[in-house]
Length: 512
Image 1 (cartoon, rainbow, N blue to C red):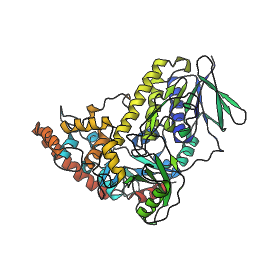
Image 2: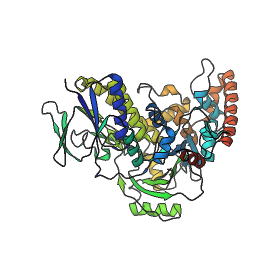
Image 3: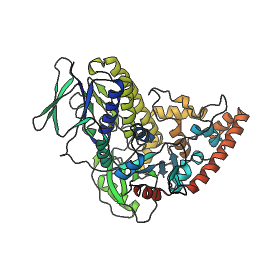
Image 4: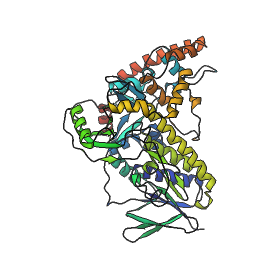
């Protein structure tokens, strides 16, 4: 029997993450198969700032990639959370740290999940304060200290995320790949089996063709296989996620200025602005609704807010939503080919990693053994995953702002029924991990760890509900109070020992 051939169509971050994971799983499962990646050197890659979740750290660690080498080669920086400015109301800022203090504290027997979060809300404390990453975010510090001998020591067990130039990361992963064949060509079309509808070969602009048994569509917004060839239907989120256009630009670092260790999500009059620090510059953009702003008006608003001229690097229009089915026949779509949400919570790369780990771990077989029942199960789980992303991002729009037509429209008409349903439930009972069923085989997902700082920052949690829950168990309340106060004190002290973020990166770069 001929060796099976898996082809990833499209390089970039999503394509190379997919190639890494599938190649690794083929080896682990002992499949007689090989992997190719199709990407064209004729198509320029636009380097923009991109942010990840901690799932990317897990990915790097799984494949034995040295984190310090990654920093040096990709101009990456740490992302320990998100700084949300002007969302709840103008002038109000809160942080969303991505670490979880529950991981380091052994709970008393029978303690409910998230009891530390519940205590913090009941006592009127900011949830972010008991996170190690909380004071590090406020002080722009790295989660490392410098020992007397000049070596680095990690300040905690929590997993960080990263900011980087995605063009550099694509090149880095490509250079690190082993046993993957690279096909430098431009896709022109496909050949399909007349009976099954499966894709049997790719056709290229130069007349060449590439036969394969299974395809991963990582062609981005083009969706060149899953939609253009297989006609996959699209489920729109345009109603509940109202921004549909982006104005990207760069800002150079000011000499000597501290380097943020967070993604800045800054609410504006018709959407919000992102600022993502790499080592060399900020990748920025204004994500807005063109129902309320023309591109020229958006450009003028950014320059007015920043007090400086900017050079716009494009006009990106996007459809927000997901495929009804991300896996059709012998094609699986990943990354922007599969779904797109506004980049508020870094769901794109996170989704790619989790979906490919799930696909490779649970569904990958020899191509002729991957039945419709596997496709149906995968599509159901991925659809629910992206719907959860949608609801979480939509929750950010439950704000007090009513100062512009955009914010009034969002408040009144764009909150999804599931968002309202969850908030109603959480008025009666504080959010618990059990409210988020595990349907991703234990892989990381948007659960209470990320919800609590956002819900707390937006003032959507009721201290009275939290107090009533804590009052039911005085022993637990005492334990939670002592633990909370101890964590706050310990992490504030740790932040005084932590290296400045820029100083940390300078130190790592000097280790070449």
